[in-house]
Length: 327
Image (cartoon, rainbow, N blue to C red; front, side, top):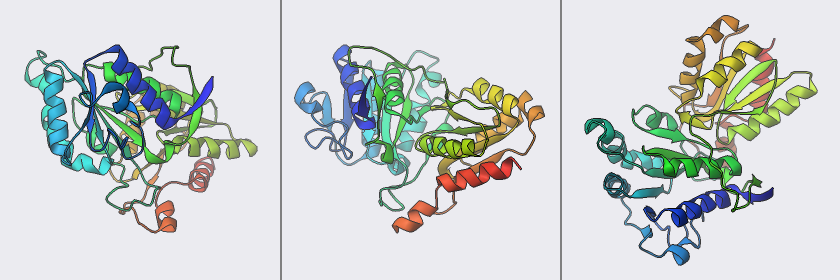
């Protein structure tokens, strides 16, 4: 297969779904001529026009509310929120309106909208543009939450998200945008169903459960562990809601050790939910050691590059935690 970037894979998914379904349209800040804060929608306004690639005022509350209303009346909007930090402004419309409408109206209304946003640290954008807030939206019944780690997954999962009848929060971690990976040619249609994890590396000694930009770091750590004779299995959950619980449970039953890695803050991070899933299952009785979490520190993201790099899991931290768990 050809290799394209994570950003190009997302653009391809958007373009293909817009060509296939006239109800799909985009709205967000500077997504037209400018091409979006990270260049994902570059060139799309030239093909689809300003009616379907809509630049909006700087109001995440209004953008999300407009998308929810459009979705309820039969359209399939895809919102771009520049930074996941601004979910704090969009949350009233997302959590109190979009997530609840299907339930509130007894199933008579669907809200087929996708909210795309860029999350995570590593770009020097400081504390108000670098957070990982996925646990916030995972807590809201009615929302699906997706965080792909590769271009292949990003394209397939976004296409499924756009076709889904429920609201989906699709988080793209910033440092992955320029990463390249194999993706089928545009003529080869494929979707990746939501709720299906991917075993990125099979192993027998320890299960590492992760997602997003921590996936390549965990794979690198697994390679270093292999050099020491330790066979690590790396599971990329890909969709946090719905979560592929059987995949995690069966892996932990096999290996007897579980480590969860994510960039977000440790306290009440999504890793705690994964740990609870393991502890509440038959996998608990197969554990040879306590469940370990490797996560971001409970601090705002610093602007200083060295400090910024130190507050999230590194390959070295993942490696050290895995070795400690195996003692």
